[in-house]
Image (tube, rainbow, N blue to C red; front, side, top):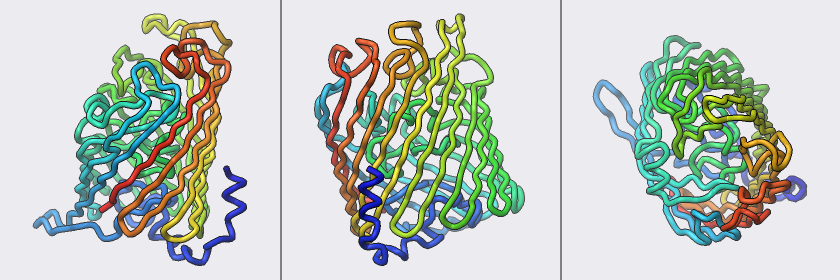
Length: 393
């Protein structure tokens, strides 16, 4: 995928040079540039409406109102027992209200959404919303304590930066295999320090949406120049928790996570590789009789031929520790299993409207029978065809 994109790099560069201005550079944290709230972060190549609706709210000042209305259709091979071969649904039906400047800021995102991800079953937008982060998935406030320090609290995006929660934020419609091992939205508090090209953030939160403030996560983001940045995030559950739900998987919620992400954005190119390691320790009281780890990497890239046409792709590898058919702890497709994925996503956007077809393929290796794809869990691969379309306003 990366080779195919590189081979096309000489086409249309001049047509989209303006899009590489610093104002549109999502590789630079907005706290670093303007002191504004960082959400919603859009990795590209999709572009948000640069002029959202706004109104003056007395002493609160200027309030921005924006929205995302998108739907998708999906066809897949070897669906899981609790999934289906095809699906048509909303991927986002959401409204965003925010005050993005001043000493006191806030962000509220409300509506329904789907979170399609590779290698796991899909569910309807209503089920996803009600079983994960609710009809107000993000709601938090931020106080600027000084030019360098800020305090933020509420229901916020996680500090792990591989891929974002909602489809419109990412290069691809579906999130990848590594996404399933990290937490995405937390409830808690975080304090950030921003100086020159460095942003350091520490957060006490509930990890995988467990309603228990037992997770500590830290991140460091360093901007080398306008085009290049690197981030390191690490976090762990400081306690043990038996709480379990769709949004709070028992194993992952008792894990530690380490993530390194590089971001490049210049001219027609967006490139974002990252590596990730997770570990779940043995805990007999929770029924975790064997420890387990995952390690993997992903390369995400997008090339814009024009301001309206682009091509995004992703390749991934992830593996779990252990030997096949030994132990009881499965974070992937059984102990000792591995998986590869490849995704390609052409994107067409005119003004606020877009459509993007997508093809993805996942191959499971050394999978335990019953834990892979298909109605009986014995299929080793899955293909998906997806089309998403909608409007960002």
